[in-house]
Image (cartoon, rainbow, N blue to C red; front, side):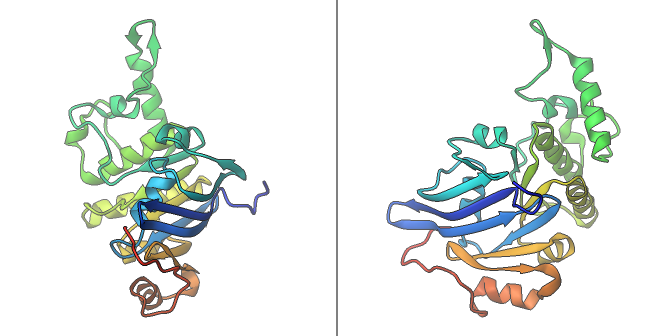
Length: 256
């Protein structure tokens, strides 16, 4: 693998549920130090694509490579082990537990039967500082944080597991203007660190603010891929709706 090769590559990914095709011959390339936005209408195949990359779905056809090596993800743990960190829209944080505990759920540092609480808090603070995350205390319960802070903690937790490819599902869907700006700053930080960042979003303002490239999904296929600097919002919306011709591979039956 060279510096110009994609960190994540999908080739001809097809996923069927009975006679219904959710994904049909989908290609995707995502690079280190880049933000790739994946957009599309409801039912376009975005959810199936996320679940395939994160190991929830196993494709019926096609190939997935991470850092040039072919991978077969049989479950989300396999995807995480390969370096793919996914933050779903529901965040999967436990509100009654504090920041440090959430960061280490399932991986608590121990000495014999005892959790090394101070070490966990120290490592959490160090990692959050490294990412430029502003949280007053790692002992703060998640339920006491703002929506933007929760999103950032969820991203940081995914990063702590070693993921260098970060997949974010609608990262600002439930956030206000200020919190959206916080999350956007965090996403930029990930890019600056050299991570491969994929955001799935309906928010065209966010997409055009952050993305280096935009991949449009339609009817389970890829309608087009555009560099953000070389396209317009009208063209992207046209690809989403079909008003602008794309290369979507149509199917008689489709599930998003």
